[in-house]
Amino acid sequence: MILPKFASARLKCAKNRRAGLTNVDKFIDLEIKNQKTREIVIGEYRKFHYRLLLCLVSFILCLPVFFVTYAPLVDYPNHLARSFIFHNYESVPAYQSTYVKLIEPIPDLALEFILSCLLPFVSLLTVSKIFLLLVVLFFVIGCHRLGKAIHGHPTFLALPCCFFVYNSMLLYGMVNYVVGLGLFCIVLSYWLEWNKKWTWLRFLFVTVLVMCAYLAHLTSYGFVGLTFTIIAAWNLYTKKDTLYTAIISLTPLVPPLFAFLLFMQGSGEVGEIEWNTVGEKLIGTLALVISYNYKSDVFPIVVFIAIVGVLISQHRRVNVVLPTFIAGAVLALLYFICPKVLFTVSER
Image (cartoon, rainbow, N blue to C red; front, side):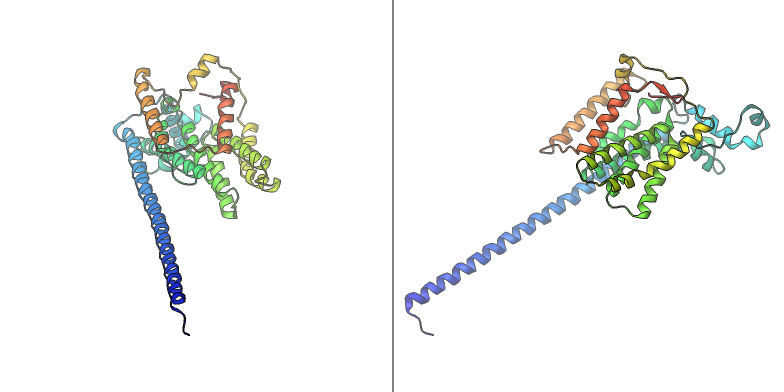
């Protein structure tokens, strides 16, 4: 086909324009691919640093357990003595004449269960150190997993929260309570991740974890039950879940409830209900940071606020996950209106 000169010139210009557009498109695609690759690399880089810092924090928190022979925890020796007597009850007549051995689903058995499993193999002091290490690691794992479940990815905010394991409850020797806190975070993390993706294996695993939380400490089961209920009610209210799925998600709470009723029919009792003053309640809000020396408590508080401030400043905005935020707010409100002592357990 023979075209006039001006027609062939226009055709060449059109081909050049199309070729130019194609090259631009390829360049844009390359930039997009490079940007995605850069984001992936940065994400992996941050994950590596997070894991490294998490291991470092865990190591630092475990150091006091290694360097202290006798842990200066007020009520801890009583727990050790009770567990030791329980383990050697059959072989010591004096124990049999003084104490009564009960086999019940008592919601305060974290230390007793670990010691009964390990005492046949190692000494009491070694078991004590192993248990305290488990207390620390349960708390660290709970902070890590809960942060990941709430935000959908590991968050650096979990790292300073790990240091709260050395709180006044632990220093008072309420080791089962602190174990229960760690288990509460772990149970909630799995429940949040699997709430809409249940399988029989996952359902059984969460149910077992809830039962472990109950046996560790009664407050742990209370935290789990309230949080599950509040988030399930919110999802039902916002129509994210149906009534059927909400009931299924709350079913893991049922077996510990039967265990508690069995316990109350045995040696369990409500006990005397004691109420606290407003001043003592306000002081109790500092339980996560109060130690033996009030003056030395100022330093970790300032460091924690500084670390959180730096981490928040690294993000353009703070994401608030409303269901878990509401659950936390309700738990904080219940702290102020609950009695000081209930079921012979102190709210401290």
